[in-house]
Amino acid sequence: CVFPGPAHAQAWKPEKPIEIIAASGPGGSTDKLARTIQRIIQDEKLAPVAVSVVNKPGGNQTLARAYLNQHAGDAHYIDLGNPTLIANQVMGLTPQRYGDFTPIAVLLDEYTVFSVRADSPYKTGAALLKHLAQQPESVSIGITTRGGANHVALALAAKAAGADVKRLKIVSFKSNSESITALLGGHIDLVASSASPAMGHFQQGRTRIVAISSPKRMTGALAQVPTWKEQGVAAVNSNWRALVGPKGLSAAQIAYWEEVAGRMAKSDAWKKELESNFWEHHLLRGQALRDFLEAENKEAKDILGELGIAKSS
Figure 1 (cartoon, one colour):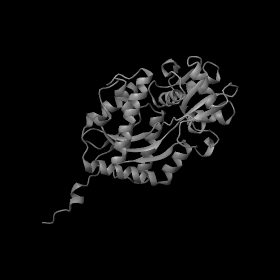
Figure 2: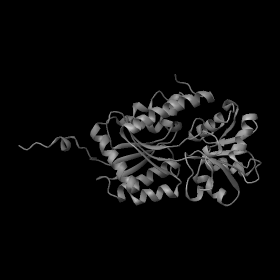
Figure 3: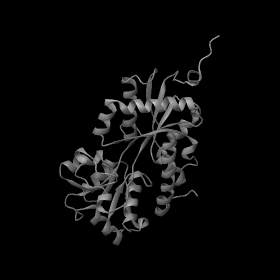
Figure 4: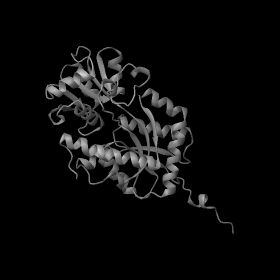
């Protein structure tokens, strides 16, 4: 008899169709990313089986993750995680911590942009934050999810400038597009959103983007937008996206998906998607991923506590 070597014995590969779980409805941002990943995996032949996208919207992504963990130990089911993987438990929306799943790899960063109308009196982000520090309730601010990445990015900047973040006047909308429409209509004064829905109005001169939450200035159409750091405000925050498996995956299953993530990140198709969607490459796996999530967990507890919406200890 010939016995396989250790590496061969531990190898795993899919044996049935893969489901990528999108915690938004068709057309939503998570759905768009899921279908991008689906297409690249298939086009680049990164998996030997069919790949489909399954939409499970609702509950601030808790429904998608409940569905994911119905398939414990089965690496044919993969969720697209973001900071709600941590924040939902901190806010008491779910008892499940990020460690109750199997985080596999962070794929990208998406940063928050801060838009005002073109005729706004706030010409810079620094001027806006100075006003918020003095009169935090005087500026109405549109976001999509309380406790979400854009809300956190706003709170971090306001806190760094000395504002009482609990007194900020927050208005929640169903989508970034709705909040920007309200901004253009004069119903709110500021929108904290992802870049994609804000860029058209910015490039056509209807809005001004006064800051971005990235650690350094972006390229392309965002090259003229200053970071908070450039304006003297120590506030960096990302709406990262990650591949997350159900609880109980084996080392071989994790290794398989880590390799898929690495090969996808090197593809020209992925690089093109990053550029066109104002996403930034950020591949984290293994111990670096674990360290990152631990730091994110601590920051979420701190800032969501400052906002008065943290429920967990």
